[in-house]
Amino acid sequence: MTRTILPNLAIGFLVLITAGGEVCRGDPPIVVDRDAMAPSGALQAFRPGFDPLPLPRIETYSNTGCKEDSDGGSDEPCVEQDELVLTVEGTSLHVLHRNATYNCCPEDIVISLTVQGNLLILTEEESLLWGGCDCWCCYDVEATVVDLAPGTYTVEFCWFDYETWEVQCCEDQIEVPGMLRGDPPVIVDPNDVMPHGAPQARPLEFDPVPPPRIEDYGRSGCLDDPNDPWYPPCGGDEIELTVEGNTLHVLHRNATYNCCSDDIVISLSAEEDLLMLTEDEIVPDPCYCLCCYNVEATVVDLAPGTYTVEFCWYDYETYQLTCYWEDIVIPRGGGDPPRPDPPVLSDPNDVAHSGAPPVPPMDISPLPPPHIDGHLHSGCRDDPNDPWFPPCGDDEIELTVDGSTLHVLHRNATYNCCPDDIVISLSVEENLLILDEEEILTNPCWCICCYNVEATVVDLAPGTYTVEFCWFDYEAFEVTCYWEDIVVPGD
Image: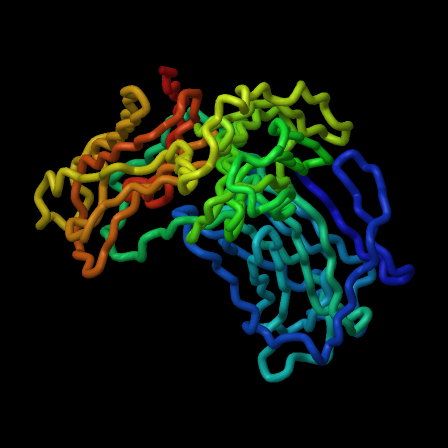
């Protein structure tokens, strides 16, 4: 992908020329007060929390030198318009600034990078010896940004323009393509590896889409005589589910609970397309009476799709846990889905009166989320006195499913020979299991070893998962990831 941006200074807007030749008008350039401009070298790259992925960085920059006549400069700035060309190749971005006007005696013209999330701020500046000369030159300045993770970025390129005597900024978006899942890790020649002395990679932090959650809940208060120690005439329980956009409103009419409850809460546990809502009363000091209540809650941040809602409560009519199920559809802008009939409950005449203290509600524990049950490593399998890369062989990742358990084995892993530990951590995003392997070093040695590292993931619900296993590979001296799909069978 190649884009060319021309800031038209005479008219005051940007002209964006795409590869197909189509011209479209964009936003005007951002003009910054020159007095507020930071001095050269003040802009430093912001490095977010580590993930073992490397951070974007400037790999190279250069300029053509003065493009004017043989006397080395002129009295006027460049005649031709400034042009900015952005070209994406794999995980690299090539930046070319044509027809830049700078002093004809610069020590250097540098491009620096600051990263703020998905915003890439590129700053072009000249450094002058002894204040420069009394002449101008035209230059073509270029730089290469490497180690861009897949995704969409906004590129902001700023320079001091001697034609307008102001800071000019151009802004555009680029797309860095992603990796294909399932490809094996690419290992480079181990003879090219340096000894362990550089700092190790840290795990990348990312913000997933917010999960569904309870935004608020409430109750009506006692709807009948709290002095009646017998079962009040509440009527049949009714569960009403209402969808509005990506929000679900839950209303439980005619709920029967102790008349001295501190609160009646509704909690949520979400597992893929199953929303488990649990209603509980909080009763530190129960009374010898029951009341009727209307209890409600609002679930927000539901992604579009079809969900099964499971609503459970302790029913004093039947003296047992009661659950109600209903399917709902969160539209991409549509209306509410139809609702089935309310639940059919047992005959309230069969219920014993409340003469004794009420039975406390049952604790409803949702299914535990997947988690690492244990991890270990083999210890150093070669000569720790050899400071160079040992003959470990190719990395091998083996995934084995046994019931609701996944066993992970990483053979021929290369790490420092004096680690405190080698750990595997787990992050779950719907059906994506992200496993990160890292060494913990307090006092590293100047040598590396071969290890076998393994971990066990438990409490996997039935379904199909994509496993992403990443580690810092000292053979390639970069983060390497391996992907594989697994199936956890049902009961």
